[in-house]
Length: 444
Image (tube, rainbow, N blue to C red; front, side, top):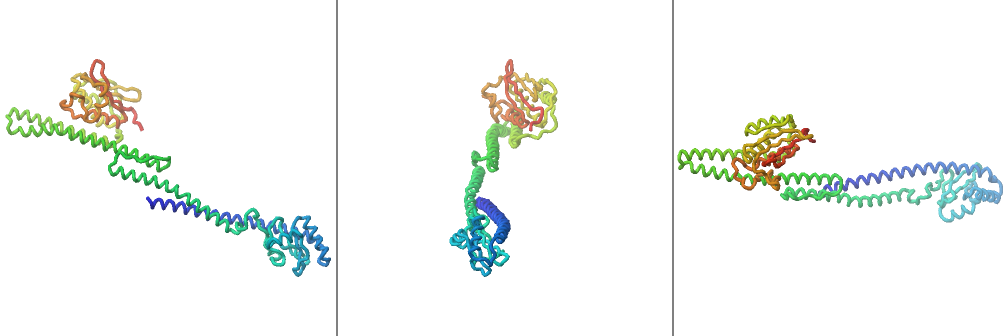
C-alpha cells in the first residue's frame, strides 16, 4: 500500500511539474510576443517623433544656443525627455527631465539618426533610465525601454517567473500529499477489514465514508460480508441441527441391528420394518439438507418455462388424497422446486392435520396464491413465524413420525428464491392454512 501511495503521489507531482513547465513556456512566449509588438510600436513612434523634431530643429550650422532652445521647447511640448548629440557624438543639448533621469541611473533611450548626421535621443515618459548618449547603443540598434512597466525587471528577464513557478509547484506538491495519503489510508483500512474478515471475524465491517469509488467498494464489501456471514451462520446452524437429527435414526438403527441376531422371526420382521423406516428418514434428511444448502447458496433460482400451479397441485394432491380446486394459473419458475414446496406443504398438512386437506389455487392481482388447509390443532399466533425455521417443531410434535424439521423451511426458501413468500394463517372452523404466494411475472 505504501508503494501505491508513492506511485499516486509521484503521478500527481509529475503532472504538476508538466503543468508548471507548460504554463511557464506559454507565459514566456506570450511575454516575448508582447515585447516584440511593443518594440515595433515604440520604434515606429520614436521614428515619427524624430522625423517631426528634426524638421523643426535649427540646422547643425546654427548656434548651439538656438539648437538647445528649440530642443527644450519640443521637450516641453511633447513632454518627452530629449537630448541632442552632434555628428561627433558630443552632447549639444539635453532637457532637464532627460538630465535628471540620466543622473538617476544608466538611462536607456531610443536613438534617432537625423539626416544631417546628428543624433536625437528620446526617452519614454515615466521610463526609468537605463543608458544614455555617449555610452549606449546608437541608431536603430539602441535597446528600447521596457515593454511591461507593471512587472519588475527580473520578471521580464524570466528569472522571477521561474521562481514563482517553483514556489507554486512546491506548495501544490506539499498540499497534494495529504489528499493522496487520505485516499490510500482509506484503502489501507479496507485492506485491513478484508484481512480481518478473512481471518474469521465474520461480524467485522469496514467504515463507509464519502461518496466516491472507494466508499462504493467499501459498501459493496459490507454487503458481500453480510451475505457471506448469513450463509456461513446458516450452514453452521444447518450442520449442527442435522448432526443432532441424525443421532435419533442412527441410534434406532444401531439398536435394531444389534437385536436382529437374538430376535424371533416375528420380531425380526418388525425390526426390519423399523430399519427401513429409519433408513428412509435418514435419506429424506440428507436430501433436504442438501437442498437447503443449495438454496442458501443462490439469491434467485433460474426461472424456466411457466408452471401450471393448478395442474401441479392436482398431481401432488392425488398422492395424499387431498381435494384441489381453483383456477388455472401459470407462474414463471422451476417446476421441480415448486413441486417440492407443494409436496412438503401437503405432507405437513397430512401429518399434523388429519385427512381433511384441501388445496385452493387462485389469482389475486399480480400474484398467484396456493392455499393448503387442514383441520389440525392449528398453530399459535406467536409461533406462526418460527415454524418456518430449520429444524423447529411445535411443542409436543418433536417425535411426530415422518418429519425431519426442514419441510417448511424449504418451502420458505423456495418461495423467496422465486420472489414470493409463504405464511401460516388460521382456518375458519379450526386448523391452519399455509398460503404460498408467487409473482405472475418474473421480477427484475
